[in-house]
Length: 240
Image (cartoon, rainbow, N blue to C red; front, side, top):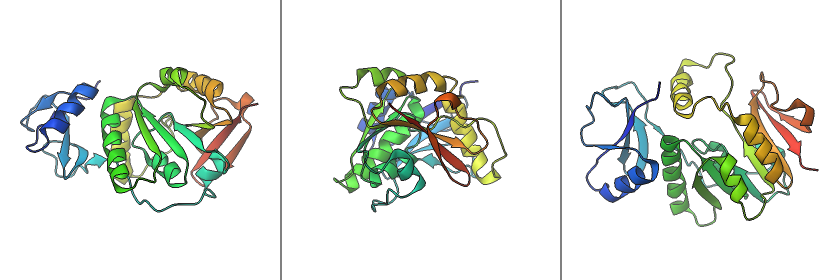
């Protein structure tokens, strides 16, 4: 069942709300008690948040741009992407957690997200981050990566994929509901294999796929290596 989401009209943000509504085809409502709407996108202090009307226990979901401090490429993610790489496409950006980390490692990053509500939250987070620093190289694209990769003018060094995790071990109650909501919005990523096919064609050095430790590789026969962590691993597919 599709989740109903609308933008809440808020005085002082009318132009921004109109722009978001037009770009992402999300309707605008003036009353947050509209019974037909399950979730609302609301702007407060410039931060776009997903809220649940009438719920005092629901924690708003928004894009955390985090610190601007430079971080080392010696982290698990940095080792997976490669210290010598320069350009990275995060083709399943979600709320941008890994895209932000990669940009803070000094990579030039293009974050692509296709789900309208998640993309609106992500774009807002990226714009807020870029307002704080002109050294960050982080661009955004609202699109289906499978199509967008074919329109690239030049191949990135690395294409990074973090498809929706398959069902596995139980999450803690604290994180389960936000993840469930994002999963409902984004779907199950049943086309992850076709995105991997496109990525293998257009990355110039490697494709990196983030997987939970219990999940099988998407393409075991082409797997080059893995960088292992306690809860996740990064599967590497070298371009030869």
